[in-house]
Each structure stands twice: as structure tokens, then as C-alpha cells.
Length: 259
Image (cartoon, rainbow, N blue to C red):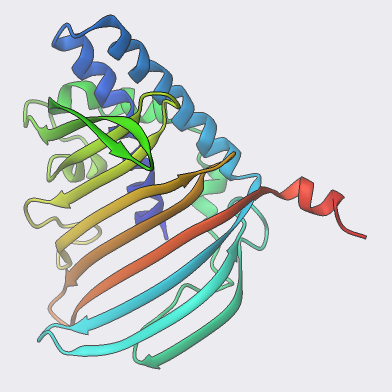
């Protein structure tokens, strides 16, 4: 789903480029500025590395109707292969009621065509000027020290497209590991309704919570929670996705280890 890809890309942008801009604008310790520069490059390297990797995803999905009634729940475990011709294979799944899990046939074709980098995205949407930043000290995340930065939209930049409009409706906090230059925790929420696709559909709620629990070579053990609510004149739904990510491997290594 393109919206989910955009949200995850936004996590990396907020954790790196925006922090670089904050450090420079506020004339902070040069070491902090250098840390943020390295974090941006680490984010882009990780995005490219992920497309050659394989990992496990355990999902728990809940869905409610417009009146707040639970429509259904689903549990599943899947093997994920971003960038592969077969990006997902379910190992197990269990659905109760009316709720839709991702399909094994889904393929993000736009991702295949999109060759832009996180640096390109940051420049195009003027990320460094679109948010105000506040350094909020450090915190222990996953047993290591992370720099904590809060971001809020400035409303000083023109809105030229849908991505600009979305960026102007979110706020949150990002944590970057000082030793690894990597995003280890992220929280984002929608501060006002947003019309994402067509004029009659409204995104009323959207929040993302991410945390790296245990670092690994590619990523490690992490958890991700996405909540969103969409309303149209015909129907309204609210979904909550709790996902646990683990066992990241390079796909070529798995093939080489086979018979």
C-alpha cells in the first residue's frame, strides 16, 4: 500500500534530515550536527538494504465501523521480501469477522518505478524548513543512548502537492541512536483531518509508533503500530495494526545456504 510506504519513508526523513536542519539552525554542538548527517545516510542505506532482505512479520489487525463497533480481528505471520517479485508469503493466518489482511498478490509497483532517494524527498518537500524542532535531551532505547527531538509543522512553506499537505498536518518525536546513527524510536500523529485521495474521503486519525527493541545487523527486533481512521459518505472504518518485525537476513545468503 502506497500510503504505508510513504509513512515509513517519512519516519526515516523525520529521524535524519529534519534533525540535521535543527542542529544547524540552532547552532548546536558540531558533534550533534555530524550525528544527524550520518543518520540521514544510514536511513537511505537501510532503505536500499531492505529491498535485498527477508524478515518475519507478526501481525495483529483490528477493524471497527463508523459507530465504533468491532467488525473483526486477524492474526498472521508472514515472510516479507521487499522489492521481490513475491514480496510476502503467509506462514499462518487466522481471521475472525470482517477485516482484511494484506494480500500475497499485492505488489507495490510504484515502489519499483520510484528511484528517488530520501535526500531527494527532503529537498523536494523542503523538510528542513517545513518543521520546527526542539531538542529534548537523551533517552535509553534498547539499552543505548538516543537523541530525542520533537518536530511540529511551521506552516511557512507552500503546499504544492498532496505530500506537502500531509506533512503540514503531522507532529511527533524521533529518537536517533548516538552510537549507530539509526532511528530507534518514532512517534507521529495527525493533528487535523486530511483529504488523502479524493475530495469525499477524509483521513480523520493517523498515528505511527515504532521502536527498535534489539539492534541487529540489518535492523533487529522491532515493533510497529499504525492506527488510522477513514471516512467517506458511504462508509467509515478504523483499523489498528500491531506488527512485530524480526529475523532480518540478506536474501542472497539464504539462497546460498540452501541445498
